[in-house]
Image 1 (cartoon, helix red, strand yellow):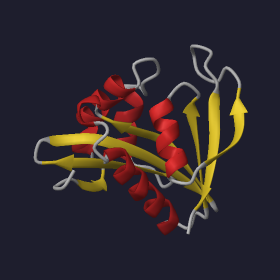
Image 2 (cartoon, one colour):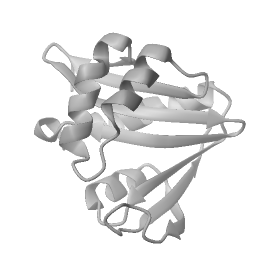
Image 3 (cartoon, rainbow, N blue to C red):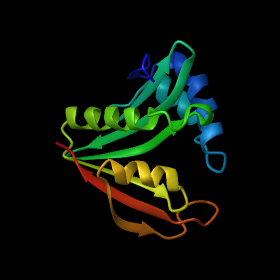
Length: 150
């Protein structure tokens, strides 16, 4: 991750983000239509970030801010570059983005069976605040977590 850069996603990144969704969330990827609309049209509430190096885009994060609350809607890291710090870098960039937009707290939902993601979030100071039973299409629960932002 030494030469990787996190930046705002652009319309030209839509194919890479769609591919990451398919690779990272095979049970419930966001649709190509939604991603295309968001990346080509933009939103005043939602920001997409990507992390890339000379070999291309390896991850993305999606952050929404409304008032004091930010929601980390998505974080994805390509399977072939996991466990190299990319998730931590994206998470830090997402927190900085949200704080820069005035948020004082970040919320997220994560599958109860996604141990690597739970470890990442707990290691970053997120704590469980609730559970959403049978939240995902396959019946898995969502763990709702929060973290104050500086």
